[in-house]
Image 1 (cartoon, rainbow, N blue to C red):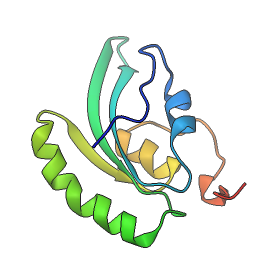
Image 2 (image 1 turned 45 degrees about the vertical axis):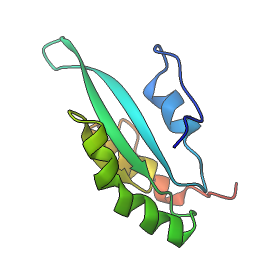
Image 3 (image 1 turned 90 degrees about the vertical axis):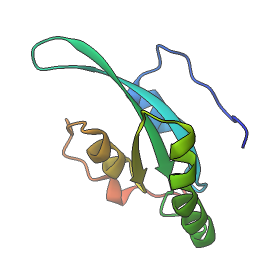
Length: 109
């Protein structure tokens, strides 16, 4: 496995989402910075298995099946699977500020 992209520590969640490929499956190690309702800043680390809908079916199966093995290498990370940005935000516990539906997202656009 090789690292194909590394973001800056000040990158926003929106920048992370825009960097996700539209047709390729990847694993992402993601450090999500959040502000709690009482104003505290916290970080949560995730291992994300990103398999977008436009991805080849065989890669979806491969990446999803191998995630368990990979998660043992990165102990302490929460794991999640996502096929869309809406699903990713839901898995990460990020509330949707927008009423738009990313199910209308066109991977070929």
